Length: 450
Image 1: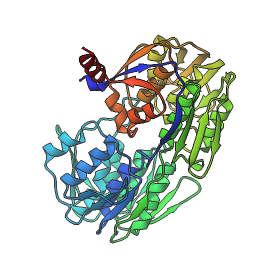
Image 2: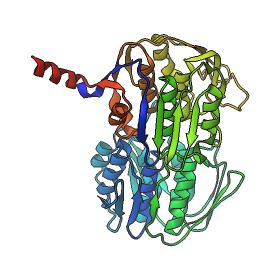
Image 3: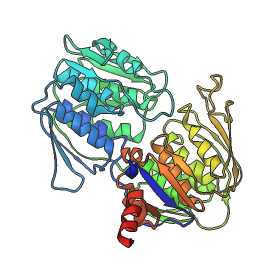
């Protein structure tokens, strides 16, 4: 399909203004939370991305009425008539999304049963779903695995439990929250994820009537209630998309104002951005990011769970680090395969060497497991346009940044994957002066000129 390919003519700085809306890592989960309410919910600042479309379709398959509101980026979700959905329809609609796993708790509460198809998602390392099912089993669900997916049944009301996560997983924390709020009794979750999107989901659930206490030691206490109502909530902005555009400004020697970006959730990124040599300015409406001239500085960087440097920030920043003077060291501690995207950068002229050893002090699960999870980036490197195949969401946007920073033309395949988490990215690129075109557009121009 030619419209899944983008021609990028690089070498020009990105300059101008774009806008980010609600966080990809919050909005679809808040939509799932609407299943728990007895009345309609109103979710605002919703981005037009594929993950939202997938969840909207899955909710509608289960009888939830979803319509746009009067405000731009507003959804009204009415779960008054939740029903079972056809197994084949669920499987077909879910596609490669992992979000259906979060339907389990709400559907068990509303219907007493749920079906989850085989799950996909970005290939950046192990994200096993078995732990989700084990958590649901602790709440009292019966689970049967079949070739076409997994069936879950709650013979009676789910019960609160005590859970300690071996790693502060965002997905597992979301699963516990969405299940525990209507379970009987108290649920104690230890070693929970505390990302801003998790806290915003807790705000959503509290608005619905949930009782949730967030401790200072990654412990969350949830006291189950008998009933929840709808919510009215404006989603927090997408700090991951904001950082991607910031890295694009840095790598292309550009100047981008990201309307909607917020300082609070990006403090760790902003510190690192400044250490590399980038400049930023915060106001009430957003953050301006720019390359102030001169040399960028090499740094040592380790990813970690919040409040550490987010793994989703790592890939776009690595592209900018190829333009920094000296040796940068990157230690990825969250996803074991997230540095695999660097092979294509080397083909473009970057100098990145991967290592199995932990090149950093942050405790890491991968050091003795033969994963290439550390990198040394030597720069500055002159990047040359190339043929690129997008491997995953953040890696894909990082390839776009590299293509925009490179001399010559790059052909980027698989750009539809970027629509999962970047709203209207093609329009935004053009608004910033990027020279990009679809092959079909070029063919139309040639037809007209002929």
